[in-house]
Length: 482
Ligand code: 8ZB
Image (tube, rainbow, N blue to C red; front, side, top):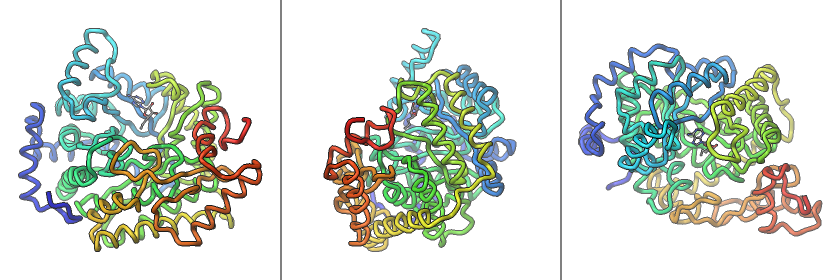
């Protein structure tokens, strides 16, 4: 494997495709030229890039749930319910864990068990096993765009089948679907496998089919400082653009402080525009994820968390928001609970749609610091790769220059300690080997010292622990004696 940030030539790509399509019998159902013709016949209401572009132009925030069950008819019924009763704008298909591990044999057993038991025995929709024709049944039954949402380090066959199946958006990336999800898959390997996915999307694009790509913004979902997730999002965006991807949605997971979160979405868009300037005709949109950390058990409290995420998404003018449910603390939601999260969110989006967080010095300062931190990280990544972003990324993880808090991967240094400041914004308590200037280090330190004074304790690891559990216990900042 020779990993470089360079568009794969067509011969190499076509050679790899043969092998990928043999990984499971349904791979035979993929005929790329026929799939392109199929995609071109889809109604505009099913094309994610169209919907996102329209929302961006109108400064609207669209809503999208997560949802997926084992069987085709039940999956269609679930998604129809979320359209009818949740008034969702965009649809997902969450893929089950066996498929994410490329374990199609177990997925097959799960499908059988589900039809025997009459209920879903998988935690998502096993799209590879169902194959192209069945994916098209789902797409054709619905009147909104469908995105594949998963968490798959090697997502090549899944991409082949779902894109041929009429899905118009594909989540994930070589970092964001590895480091938070896998323990011992190398970054080199996942970057390579995701180049294939992006090249596939790029191929559709060259043939006039708009497929949207969305790196998974929130990463591990807990206390991820904006400059960490921005660095990864921009790297994955750039790697995708090199392979020919034109429609990109970059994401960020809610931290909880309004000013920091709004600054994060605004700076993400501005930074990405800047870094992507060498690629033509990129349609860039943003996605805001409602709180990805631990939730309260209580449904009423959960609606509070959901609504705060909805309000922040609206005020940040993110193009879309991924919605949580009042069952978050329990596991996979019922369709009713899922629709409730959507309705609560839509209420806030509608109420706030014509309001904006007034620009002020605090917002400007947050944006400035997020940009500084992100640029310092990315600059070192490019340096380490001697100009090659893929090589730089591999080396940056080795050096702890890219480092994701609380990640299971052995390829991640794990030196960072994030904690909230006195206003709940996420700062660096320990910045590990991130290449930050003295100014950035001092800024973070002062913010945490100010909290320490308020709580009459030194900033320490205990703050980190307290913060992790705080929202579940009904607070944002984990104060002593909550
Ligand atoms: C990284 C994503 C985690 C979130 C939700 C979890 C959590 C996972 C499904 C699902 C509805 C599913 N999630 N699988 N939600 N249907 N099959 O993803 O609850 O919020």
